[in-house]
Length: 209
Image (cartoon, rainbow, N blue to C red; front, side, top):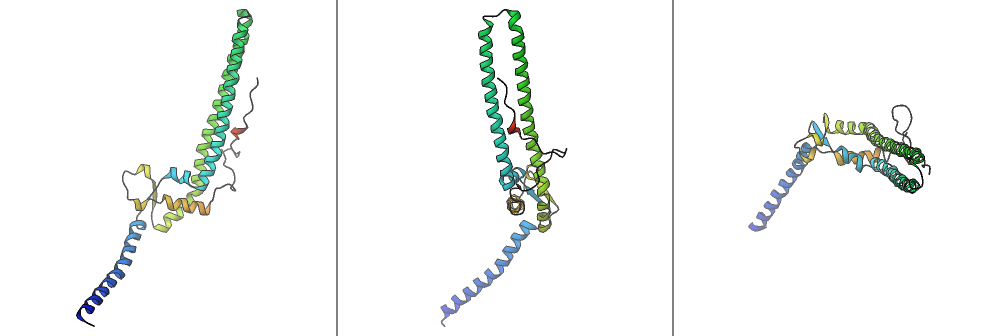
């Protein structure tokens, strides 16, 4: 082998040695950057909305919301038509005759508005309850993740001013929850604390004409 051959072989040997050293060092450094940290961060909104569980819940709530919106349109159309009829009747009635009808209509408007407001509040409470129950059900998954990486806490990323991307475990948590919990459809229904599941707002009774 000539002098150039020895030089090429030497350079190849040095390069191979450097790569063999840098590979493990780089992996070790990456692991240290990701795992050897006492604090992790998490995007709770994404954790809920991007998991199979959260997507199922949000789809169910959206369906209920759509039913309430349709009911609201029906009520509005009904009251508009009834108000029009009262306006026409007023032209042929005395004030004494018309007043009871007007009062009854006003009372009906208030009642229907209160009922619809109650349904909306129920839906809002259910949203909050579903989020709380979700977090309760995934705490064991998050705890295991914390234990595996040797951390001591997970912080909501909204409470952190600045952090490295390597300590964000949102994606890892989503993957684990999807694998271990799934969409949660086979789990017991959520409870409002009284032992009863939230009422189905989609079954709201129709209003009377």
